[in-house]
Amino acid sequence: MHNNVLILDFGSQYTQLIARRVRELNIYCEIHPFNKIPEDLSGFKAVILSGSPFSVRADDAPHPDLSQIRKKLPVLAVCYGAQYLAHFNGGKVEASEIREYGRANLSVIKDDEMLFGDITENSQVWMSHSDTIKELPENGVRLASTPDVINAAYRIDGEETYAIQFHPEVYHSTDGKQLLENFLVKIAKVAQEWTPEAFVDMTVEDLKKQIGDDKVVLGLSGGVDSTVAAVLLHKAIGKNLYCIFVNNGLLRKNEFESVLDQYKHMGLNVRGVDASARFLEALAGISDPEGKRKAIGKTFIDVFDDEAHRIQDVKFLAQGTIYPDVIESVSVNGPSVTIKSHHNVGGLPAYMKLKVVEPLRMLFKDEVRRVGAELEIDKELLGRHPFPGPGLAIRILGDITPEKVRILQEVDAIFINGLKEWMLYDKVWQAGAILLPVNSVGVMGDERTYEKVVALRAVESTDGMTADWVNLPYDFLQKTSNTIINRVKGVNRVVYDISSKPPATIEWE
Image (cartoon, rainbow, N blue to C red; front, side, top):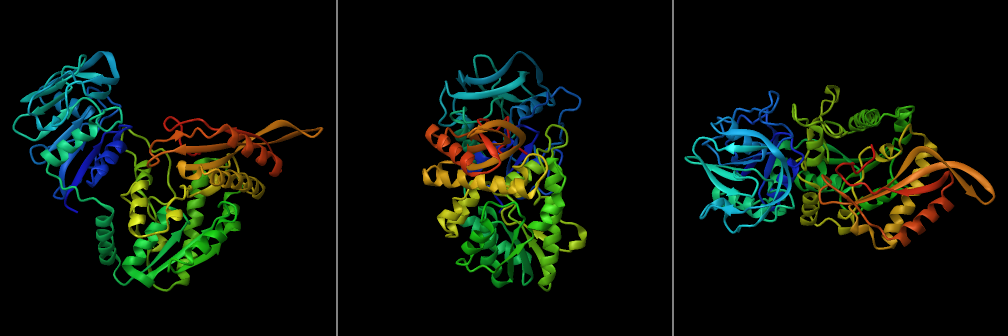
C-alpha cells in the first residue's frame, strides 16, 4: 500500500472523524501522534494536521518538527494545524475576542482554487477555536473568509501546503467531504483504491508472507471482529489456524454453546474451553473497572498459554483488534488521554514467546463488516452487535459474583430477544443491560422488597467512536421492564440510559 495518508494527531476530539472521512473516500490513512512521526515517509502521499485543545501560543502546546514533511508532501492543516503553520512561519495568532464555536458560512472564496473546487460561497462550516489567525504566514495566500474569521483558509505559495480554520470532518461542514476529496484526489493525487476487495487481497498476501508455514492460535469470541479475522487467516494459512473459544463465565446467556454451533458450518478448526470458574476466581473482590479489565486480560493470556501448549510449535497469537481499540489505547503525549485500556491491545508477556498477528488492526467496525461481506460471511453473524471483550464484567458495576452474573444474563437475554422480536435489533448499533450497585425499594404483592436496579442501554453509531441513544418505543420499553421485573428474581427496578457519546461512553465502565 503506497497511497497512504498520514494524519498527525494533536489531541483533537475530531481526529478519528478525519480518518473516517478519508476512508469513506476509499483512501487509506493512518493516525500517528504528533510526536511520533514515522521516520520513513516514502509510503505516504499526503499529510493532514489535526486540531487540538491547546493554544498554539502555550509553552506546553504540541510543536513538532515538520521539516521532513513541508515542501516534500502535500499538507492540509486543520484548525490548530493552521494556527501552528501561521504562528511559526511569520504569521500572527491571537486570542479571539469571541470564542468561535459552531456553524459559520464562507462569505468569500478565492476564485479558481483547487481546494475549493465545486464549493460555493455561503457553504456552511464548523468552527471550534478560541484563538484566531490575525496575520497569514510568510507567502500565505488567503483562500476563504467568514463574516467573523477573515483568514478561514489559506495556502502557502511555493509548496502544496493548505490550511483551514474550520473542521471539514464534522457533519455540520456541509462540503467538508468535497474539500477533503479536492485536497487528496485533485491536489495530492492519491488513488482511491482502499476497497474491501483490495483489503482482502492485500491482507491475505501479507499474512502468507508474515506467517509462512507456522501455526497460529486465535481467540474467537463469536463477534464480528474475531470471526472476520479468523476467516481472513483461514483463507491465508488454512489448517495451520487453530481457533479457541474461551468461556470466561461473562458471556451472554447460553452464548458459549450457540457460538460453537455457529462455527461448525464455517470450515474453521474451533475448540471450546470452559474457563468460567478460573475467570470468576480471578475477579473475586475486584470493583475497579481497570482492575477488572487487567484481571480478565491476564487470565485470558494464562488460559491461552495453557491451550497453546497443547498444540505443538505454535508461533503466533492472532487477535481481532480493530482501529478504535488501538486509538483509545494510545495516548498522545500531552493533549489527549487514554480513555481505557483494551485487553487485546499492547502485546503479550515475554514468557508466552508468541508473536502477535492482528489482520484487522487498521479497520473501523463498519469496514470490518464490509470486509466480512466480501468474504461471504453469513449476514446474521455480521449483523451482531459489538460485545465488550471483558464481557458482562464491565456491565456489573462493583465486584463480580456468580449470582450477579446470573441476574444480568437473564436481564440481557430478555432485552436482546425483545429487540429481535420487535424488529428493532438491526436498527441498534449496540445494546445491553447494566447491573447497578444500588438496591431499590419496591413492592411485590403485599411485600416490601429491597432489590437490584438494572439500566438498559441501546445506541446507534457508525464505528463506535461517537454514539447517540436510541429512542426505543415506549410500548417496547414498558413490556421489557415488566418482563424483567416479573421473571428475574433479584431485580425490582428498570431504567433506560439516554446519554450520548460524548460525553458518556457506550459502556458504563
